Image (cartoon, rainbow, N blue to C red; front, side, top):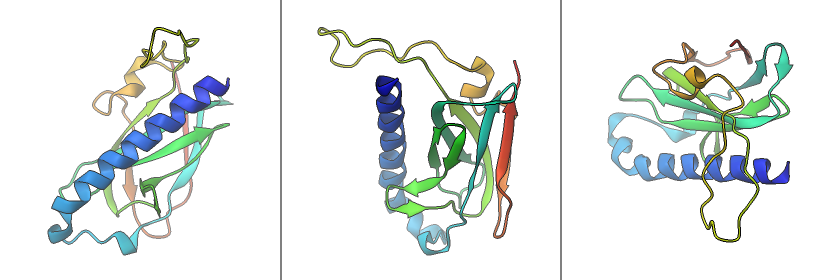
Length: 147
């Protein structure tokens, strides 16, 4: 259980770092990190809150900025960078990761992720069928994943 949570935290950190690295090239495009929209919600699998995982927002427009949020007992809050809660307004494709964390092996410095706890279609933004239009004042998101 604790290992699965640690892997989720590592995935969120990686996504946040990738987002942070991308900031340097996007500041001239009009993207402002001071006008982030708070985005949170719940992810369920067949009506049951997803225990852990990560939600990823992939921008569909050049002015967007990738964002991610760790799922904990179904609930998530999106971050654009480690210190920036919220998401740049715009349209996003969504992918979700939730995997079984294998038992650590003394010989595996970087263990391979375990099998997905959700249908694989949700792990790819092109096949998930999940999108979101982030705008000021939006309601919480509620996704109920189906097989």
